[in-house]
Length: 152
Image (cartoon, rainbow, N blue to C red):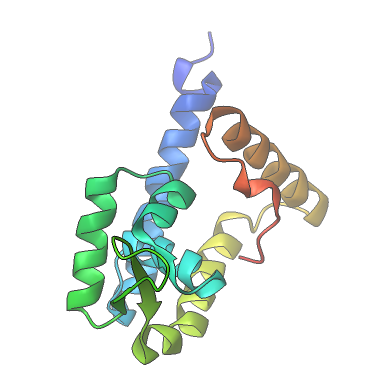
């Protein structure tokens, strides 16, 4: 009899996510980053000057969660909030010099975690695995932005 834990995509995905989160947290901790900050920085490194609303949509997180993450990032000197020139109610999230200087070491740390996790896969298996994960995310997500392969 096979175990639900070994046959359930949801269970396995959740378990893998927790393991990745733990490993990523350990990998970026020496840089003074938490995983939520790293995920936010990934979006801002890709496109600086997003709004909080943009980040909520791109990361598929709750507004309150993003507000708390941005408050910590501002406190830690990673971002500055500046008024939007075209919308007086909105504020643009701008990276600081410190945040920009963390891009390469943080990406290297994440790549290292990914490399360890996928070390037993051939290149074709890795590509198929990642394509499958993107399909699952697309099927379950409110955002469809993960169609693009990542270099992580």
